Image (tube, rainbow, N blue to C red; front, side, top):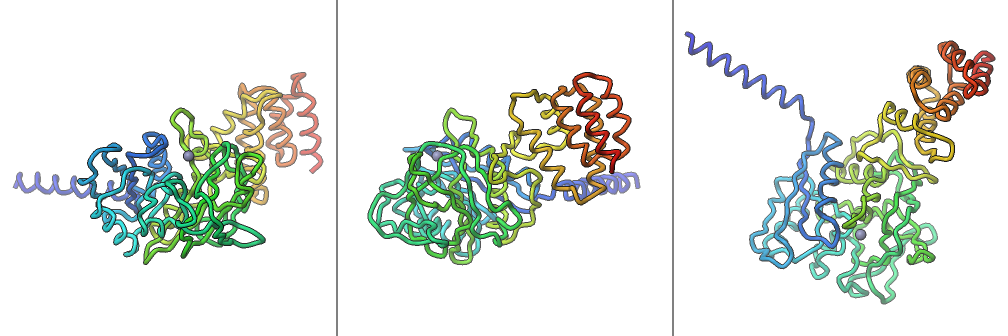
Length: 404
Ligand code: ZN
């Protein structure tokens, strides 16, 4: 009897463990990052991509390293079929024929693929791969690889004129324009958004068949670019498979990878990966995305919480960058039709005014309160009347609140 009880107790433990496991994780999609050879800092970029995907909670991501450049590739046989989406952060030696055949089969039969930045430099000689990526660059690509493909007069055009495939000017922040705003990846995102400092791949060429351009960016010839509106995000259908191609996200050997920390890069990468895996996007639109004027950087690869944002904003002094203040304003504006949400912000701002935040940041916050504050704000503002540095703005805010 005692043994049976022990057994039952053991079983229920197992059951509980399984239940906790299945409730605790919502990762629905298995993702594989392939890297190990790249003319970029793949050691860093692959970890960042894994973070970007895993932070969504819907991916469980593994990284597979190829043998180092120049070593035998014969044993490199990824098990693509175990994954719903394969992300290529790879630009290196050719794969063995078996791996190439397996990959083509995987995609043809409905597998998802994300082509990331220099992965479109890879495999210039592999016909099927070039069909999958739509457009590529470098590796002696030229008119034999296919046409140039860029946005002109309101549509994408193919340009068969001869010339090299692939190039970019100096790194800089640039404006991305979503041309297809109804695609699951871009639907609900700002139509125009500033991308953080990055290389803008230009003069790409390739088969460009079954391709749907989601976004373009102007490649400025004064910065060494092509003078064309170049495609930066696009999808390709290949058999039953879906390919999401982002040319964004340069990660150099010594830099902090600003391109990979841009909110627009991260958001489109996550959504593109989900779309490649499933054909749909369920991820919510994040809180603070860039607009057509300002870049938004997510240091932790995810948006700051309001508390984190206020903490950063609280260090503001006149003359410093106002980006955290601007972000705060933007977030409050976005809920301006929702009294319940405004009230939550009001409470947080009042706590802020009571903290050791700088005078300049408090004055800024009082200006916000002046239009959205209620009588709850009055006692806190009255307290700020007593200090010379804050009296003027407190008077202004009180007057506006009381007159409403
Ligand atoms: Zn690069």
